[in-house]
Length: 101
Length: 101
Image (cartoon, each protein chain N blue to C red):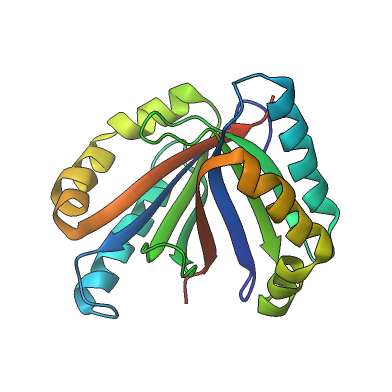
C-alpha cells in the first residue's frame, strides 16, 4: 500500500441464514458500494478462520482521508448503512490500516 | 485476490509503550516473518480506526492451505509465537479471507 492510502476493512456476520436468498441480496447490495466515488481495490470476501465468528469481509482503499470522508458521507453509503447494514448485520468489526511510518 | 489464495491477517496491540525501543524491536522481528517460505504480499500496518483498540496489523497471503499450514509449522514461526508473540502481544484478532465463491 502506498503512503497516505487508507485500507478500510470490516469483518461481519449477517442475521440471515447461510446460503439464503436474503444473504445473497445483502452481499449484492454491498458490492454496489464499489462504484461509489473514491473507492478503490474493493473486495467482498469470505472469512474462513475458525478463531472468530465473522463470516464475511469487505476491504476497500482510499487515496486519503478526504476520499474516505466523502465516501462515508455519500448518500448511497448513508442509505446502505441505514436501510441494510443496521437491519441485517448481527456483528461486525471495522479495522482501518495505513502503511507503517 | 485470485481463487484459492488465503489472506491471513491479524490485528494486534503490544504490551510495550507506544514508540518504545521494545515496540520497534518486536515489529522488526515480525517483519522477518515475510522471509518464510510461502509468505506473499506481506504487510506490516498501522491500525488507525478509533472504533477498535488494536494498534497494528499484519497481512500476508498464501497460495493455498498447504502453504499456510507449512508456514504455521515452520520452526521460525513457532519460535516467534512462543518467544515473542505470547510474551509481548496484549490483544489480537486473527481474520483469514478468501475470495467469495
